[in-house]
Image (cartoon, rainbow, N blue to C red; front, side, top):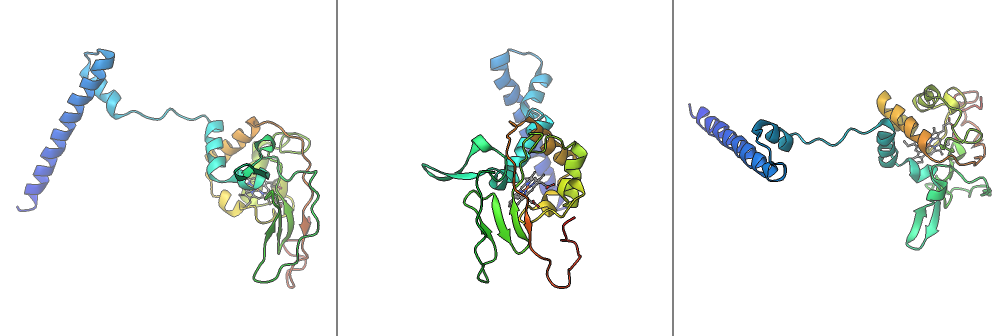
Length: 218
Ligand code: HEC
């Protein structure tokens, strides 16, 4: 018995609150819209939803929060410190920037990155971030949606080639839903194409025991 009393009170409070919402909601909207239709007005005030995004808009949002620009857009020094060079947005490692051999690592230092964050030396070798713009000669302009999905899902270059090298975080990006990956692809089709031939990676020899294994160039 003791339990039901507060519950009943609760319900009464919620009911009161709902009535309050309907009254104030329709009152407020009434000021602007001069509508007599109370149920219509209260619906408006309680179920306002963000407008639906197009796939490309959703893709832009995902590319932003998944930090694709961090590695695929070259960084430069700006007045406030390092900033992304948006004139080269998502065009990968600049072809004009020839990298010297990577520094020799002194354990536990293991990874080195260029100032642009587009060239990386890891135990797997040297990798250059890819041109994700729709340029058909040097970007992913010729890739269809399936190729894009396969590359990310399999971690294989152009969907079925050599393994995609670190630090490209495909193991995490591949966990996007089909719909989200397709949205990312849709967005990448809409960005300005930039002609920029990214160098081939330099794969480190496979560690002992892995000879002929997965990291072999295919
Ligand atoms: C931490 C750095 C980093 C981040 C973050 C990153 N990438 Fe990459 N990405 C790379 C590197 C490095 C390569 C080149 C790897 C290689 O050549 O094997 C690459 C390659 C690629 C490729 C080409 C794969 C192929 O077939 O050769 C695609 C597509 C790609 N990234 C998409 C994305 C997308 C989409 C995002 C964000 C959701 C993203 N990347 C975020 C570093 C990154």
